[in-house]
Length: 501
Image (cartoon, rainbow, N blue to C red; front, top):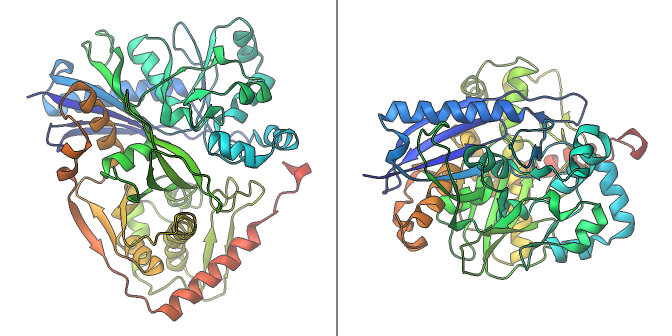
């Protein structure tokens, strides 16, 4: 039997999983990496640490399964998007830390761009809104502020790549590439042609030669792994999807109107809208869902929330209120509600549907009655409220009511969160048997290229429901909670003045 491997390089950890041709899990290994925050609003990752961790989890998962690299038919990659690594074009070695998608240091660049290029035109061209979230402003900051990076750019030795591009280069030594789903997050790609856009490149002062080539997500081999590397064999790397698009693919949302929400470091809801992009009027993004070689790309509407699971991590590591996410769940379940406490985790501003980079987080509604249990419950409810904001905006854009939600990601292991999510959305919430759908989606992409499966319809039968939560909250209570949430959100806005950025 041939197996398919998938690397999931996420915001907090790197995972490698091995799947059978029936989409079942054979083996998995995972390792966290450091979160580097040199200043408020700045977030970096050590790209060399990420490479070493990726190498380790590949070897570990293969060993646990009793397999060698030669047993793999193909390898797929899924990755945290927008995070930019400047690396040497010839060696793949990083020239600076990765600037993470949550990082705000590109805000000044965005403010300047707004003065000369209308946001409506940006939306029509790229599908995106002005925000330091996207890769272009991070690249501009690196060019303007890091002499080593600037010199390498002047010499033509640099590539500004997202994590997929970096890993393909380190694994294979091939010319730098990025797939269309990741390229669509740079704020530099024409979402219609799937090419780097000359006008956006000129506007930002970024040269095409500094960027990886844009390739299909499925249907092409990007290179073969170095036999001296972690796989110990030459394996085709043949599928790339940004993490949220990979989750959409892994949830088998192949038809227009099908939606999923991933609860990871952030919270991301995507709805498949077919082969024609549309411009959102309610704070959503238009993004490439996936692109098969020789076919029209599929597009999605997306709502992005910066802080969801990372709020649990913050409560654990910074506040030391709990030692594990499981302890937080247990404490939250000991109280019937949040006790009037609402947390809006705008650590990096607010993403969709608000798009306020000058917002900052708050804990609202504190009284002497509030306990550690109430704060823990408010942490979980914050993720659910933010996801509900995305759902409401999606419905306004599409004109179609979302009748159920496919949910995946690490936070779906939280029963109180999923139960509250069903309550506040007033729809059923379903969790699949294979919860790590980002890895599964990348494996599907690689396997389709390798001929393990012929098309998306071959994959539909593999999606199985594991658990379902139904709404139980009465409408009066729901509306009161939503009113308090909106009030708390309003308190975060304009916390940072422009001269304080």
